[in-house]
Length: 145
Image 1 (tube, rainbow, N blue to C red):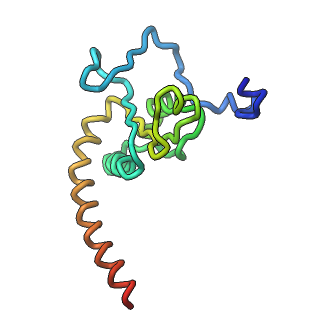
Image 2: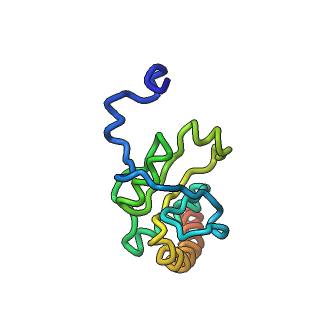
Image 3: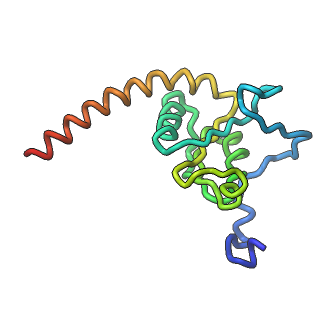
């Protein structure tokens, strides 16, 4: 159906990241409730929060050197495992099934990198708070010149 309606072209399929081996099991849960350690953590967030996660991943050298992903959303999981933290705009199927808001997107973080990125968030959040004050003052100054 996706080919028929023009959503995706057959030649695009080969470029969609996928896991090298089919997992024996997949567990979806809230991070705090996960019964096993997470291979990948999927954050649904607003762009401003995605910015902070991406900046933290960059700070610790765990950001993927690839563009923001589009459809299908599920490719963000193997892409993160292979390349590092990656952002995904989501796809229509995912948005319908999950209720992801129009003002939200995904950031996908390899589980092995999660603590290091979380630790870097303290520095990034603090720096962004200071830069916000600076930029607000600078904007006010520029608008009066």
